[in-house]
Length: 319
Image 1 (tube, one colour):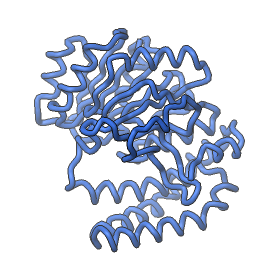
Image 2 (cartoon, rainbow, N blue to C red):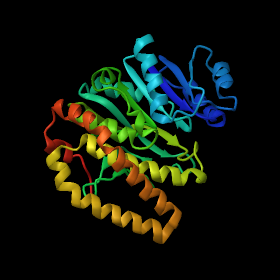
Image 3 (spheres, rainbow, N blue to C red):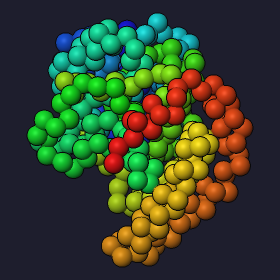
Image 4 (tube, rainbow, N blue to C red):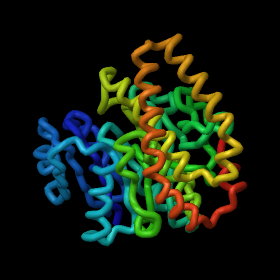
């Protein structure tokens, strides 16, 4: 069985599309777990109507992505016999064979503990949204592979990659018992990169299956008004992700590149966006540096459990 964990905040309109695509899946052994972050719309009532046996976890407030999916994962691990957990945003539509293709891939590739899929733009279906998550070699920033590019087949190769976008990603249930859950201090943004990094460190691999296709309304659950918040959180979480996961030798080697990348990014914010966005970005960086020391115990724990050579992990980075 698959546990399908859906974090949701006022997403009833998006859920209509997602649920329609779930109802026509060729693979039907799944259980929906809706984790609702205090929605004021009809998300919960609509879910109960469409899937009467769905599990509803009501948070009562906007707890963020990481905490929400953790609640769903914990419920699945404790109460359901699911071998796989599928995390999916409410603003996604799945191809009819999406679940079947994904499960067949896990059976075919027993070394895969995480499965990344091909995410296309919901509104422009020949444009890529995400074909797997990576880290750039040049400055260590996360990268959604292919984002904004035309889907010409360039990313149609099945392969082991760095990580999966948790907007639509599969995980073997056992991985959460081993390395833990998503880092809730991230609240939102880059928590999936952090999780993938931790998984790689402990020897768990991520496999990319381009035949599993879904369509994402990127930004469907946020708005322009949240852009400053997103920028701040990304800058903050980038600092935390690095201090937790980078092996010391790699961290020191990349430090000059980190600084150069930040300078270029902040210059871009001032020149092409606004001074207020620059301030939010710099504030996020300072917040990350302030919280850095709180992540040292986690860093020591993660690095003590390291099973993967540095070269293998950095070999999954991209230019």
